[in-house]
Image 1 (cartoon, one colour):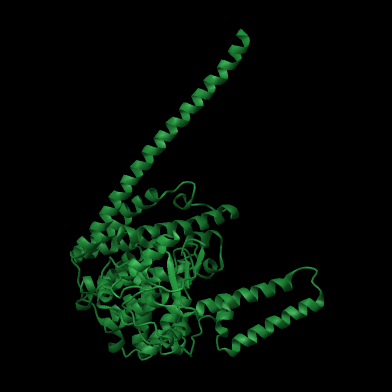
Image 2 (image 1 turned 90 degrees about the vertical axis):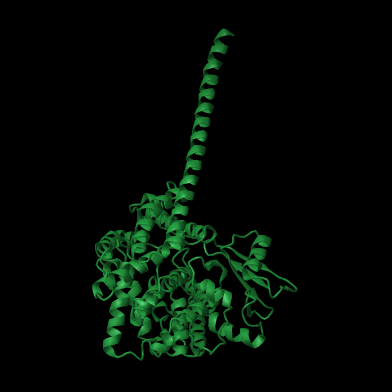
Length: 492
């Protein structure tokens, strides 16, 4: 059984297969390309392989064998979202029935009884936290000690590079990769983090990212993997303390928690609850911080449990500072401050180091164009879909619409050229002054991406010009033809 779901198209496709056999030397990329080609789906589509019992089967041959017991554990650990969705949908359907006008009293009472039974049933399964959005931060205490994915050396090496293809992985595989990063950087050992608590925390993080076209858990993984690659590439562990490394990684994981899919401009213009709560000051980023530390407040998800109060205060302040720095409204302020320090940068100066960490998380947050074209371009589609959702809503609600978010005005080239030229390249080139090693693997790909989009824009402009001339020619012919008719009639 193969199920496929696109992250930026509402599409579900199920293929029932008698058997599928792959060589152990067949790469997961080849396997995924085969299914995408067979179904006509784009390569950034998420693919899940399930056996006849509904247990997930790994598409990566480098992972452990697909034993029944192994995947039963994984299903327990990673099928929480499906359960939440199913329960939420059932409750919504029942509650909608209650709201219908004209419904008989007996029917209303029956619906209420059904709802009560369903809630009691779910509570008995110890998963009642998913029935109420206000309670979804409660950790699951029955998280199994599922076998850890044995990442192949090829995967481990690729994970350290900006070229890593983030579209090849399922949610459970991304969670295992994140877990590996914390272990590989020595954070689990150095800070005595309970490995089971780390698993629970990552699962809770996953569940608190919404299924938006762009700002979703895959984006969280993408940003954190880029941070991990920068730590490795720039040898940051030789220049930063381990506390700084922990702050960088944790801020990357948490930086867009519970993102609603509508940006700060919408929140402020629409006067949403978040904008009112945070006085129009970085409402989303403040919310991400709040959700992150609500999760940490749960003992079963507190990876900082072994820190003393003063050390935790330092971690908390550092994480909040970095997440708030991801507000693009502060981009100019933060980059200008870094430019003033970079020529005489002092790694022993706390203010300098904090500024650098803010710039690093900003780089990672908007780093998609650093990646290979086939990895980066699908993210543009995802972002534009989220932009169009917002602009469509703004038009309906009579709110201002930004031109770069308007589906009638923006194209891929026009959306990317200015952003790459005036935001990405200047920021990465400034970081390059401190870390020259990023030029080849990060800055040069940005320059190539800029050139490619400029070529695409020239092609679009040429086609639009030809189309415009053709339309004018057709209109001219139509006018001449309409003028010839009365003259012919007069002569007749």
